[in-house]
Each structure stands twice: as structure tokens, then as C-alpha cells.
Length: 150
Image (cartoon, rainbow, N blue to C red):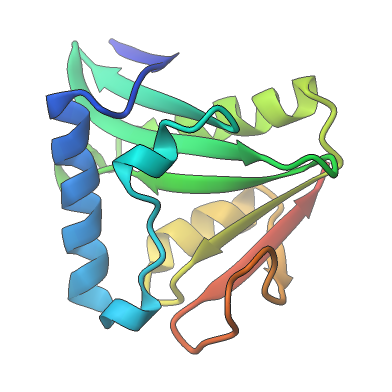
């Protein structure tokens, strides 16, 4: 029933999911605390974008930005309220981490917000621990930076 595949983020149903992710983040944090990559950014060659479909309907997404130094950043992991509790987020995380291992990355990073408690708990279950800012993120009270050694 659940299928996860590499897809383009510039499809209408996926764009609607990304907009729902943006709305969710905007309800929790001010604009200076939101760092979601837009659709054009997600279409770049250094990003692999996954879409989860439940019975053919978009039910979640997630991506990896591949860095040249053998690390990567998880981005845009989102499952809307209607899809939660079905293992979609866990399945996306399993696939993303597996892709990173297959590419022989030595570390993954992610940036999330501390109020995203369900997401933070899931990341911790996957072995992510808190770290300082990475890449070009500023240190700010709206971000929680996490990393996992692979």
C-alpha cells in the first residue's frame, strides 16, 4: 500500500504537500525560523527527492542534499496529519538513511525546529543527536541541529 520512490518535487500534488509543510512550519515558528528549501531548490542535481504514496496518493516526502565532503543533509521530511501513525515517516527515514549508507556517506545532518516534537523523537530513534549549526545555517532559537555518524 505504501510506495516510496525518487520523484520530481515540481508535480502539482507534491507542491501541495510542500505548501502544507510550509504552513505547518509557519504555524510554529516566525519567518526567520523557517529554512525550508523551495521547489526549485529541491530540483537541483545535488538533491535526491523521495515521495511516499499511500494507495497512489501523496502521503509524505523527504530528501537528501549530497555534500562533496562525504556528508549529507536530510531535508523536507514531512508527513501531513492525515498520514501520521502509519509508519510513513519511519519508512522515509529508513530509505533516506539507507541511501546515505549506500553512497558511503560518513555523516548525516538535519535542521528541524524544537517544537516539532514527534519529528525530533523519530530522529532520536534513528540515532541522531544534537549538534551545532552546520552548512550556512545561523545559530538561532528556532532551530535544532542534529547529526548521525554512519
